[in-house]
Image (cartoon, rainbow, N blue to C red):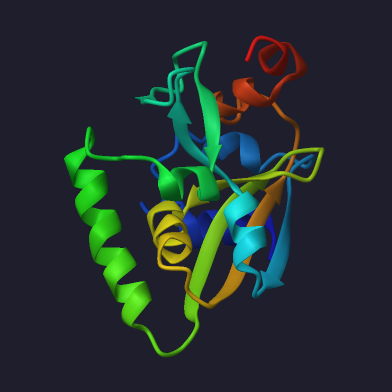
Length: 165
């Protein structure tokens, strides 16, 4: 898969992140595929959800906010965001009742230190971890520079941003 295929697959609506689609078509951005069945590895993926220093949900625009991993989000109280909580409840119940591995097709952005930031599928990933479900994960991963011009959330992963968190 190349970036044109990625755009065709995910660009028509599933990804609500503020991704600059024109920038991912640049030559320095490539697409990797990743397959695994590890719930622990899924829990280590990063989300576009944030918490402030007090552990409350926060916006990516909050300079004190830190990105949450899937595992951190799975144990965080989401009642302040009722729609997110309702979606997680439905997906968690579904994952918990499944007699087969939960199949997740995810889109992510890989940082140079190999951390993956989910662009799509966060609710399903968090629900699978909450349900302690068996998973089959297939990720389409954009690999490119940690440039907030591509995705504003990446500002939280720059060395300067990390040193203030």
